[in-house]
Image (cartoon, rainbow, N blue to C red):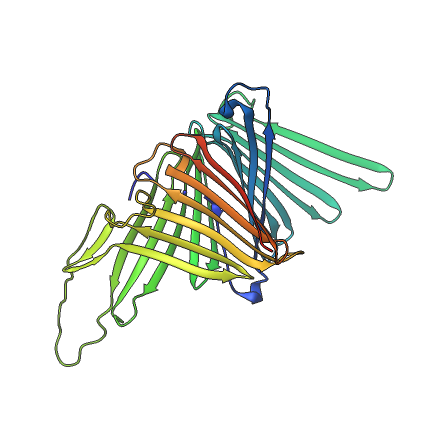
Length: 362
């Protein structure tokens, strides 16, 4: 289905296998300023909020950083850092949600071999690339450092064409293959694919799911696979009619209208659901959402938090994200509870709701 995000990933990523030492962490940092000298309430309230989500597995950490202001969704950054053999890798991808548009991609790679340090720093902006190669080492009293710069920073120099990076990793109960592609104009797409989703009680049917993010839209496609086993004595040729309408997968009289995933990652619950049933959209208008939630014991009492990203179809924002909704509750004592919520309508790029409340019992 076209025209509808987060990390990212935004969202993005989660894993419940303890053997991989996976964790899902983050923070929600919000500052609210009140200026009583302003004539209107809208001008009197100022808000800046940052939402960070980090998925860590093994020696790798994937982070999504979302910046919100009273004017709406203003910044989106994705970071990855890790170790691949002897190489240390760090990468940052920036988007402008108000465009929406790609801003820049920077990747830094370093390795030390036999006392010599090598480094590579690659930067891609729209129609603008730069590659800096460095090497350095010490031999007795002699120190040697070298820097080679390719690209003027004024265009796609040194015949740069494209980059395709593919990664495989486990996610909850499935193996995920991911690919991210760039061309000379910048970010092209990022794709997540899982194969062989088992349908209970239908052993001859499995499903493949592919989720693709473009700058101005996102798609989710479901593809069927049929395995009727080996036939004894007879050769039987079976053809199953399958098609899609509006994104939903139809197998004869069988129609698949949605797909979802729920798993726990060290005390944090990840949920992702998509539906093509226009009569049962989430919150009445969103066809897909991803949510992170947790309940734990805080310093003073029970603490709960949830962070949701909802998608439209079609939409006009980055990745077709339509709504960001965050809520928290803290039971400070048996007599006092504090709660706060933040809601941003990304489609209109406006901060729409901020709720602060408390309850006192005696």
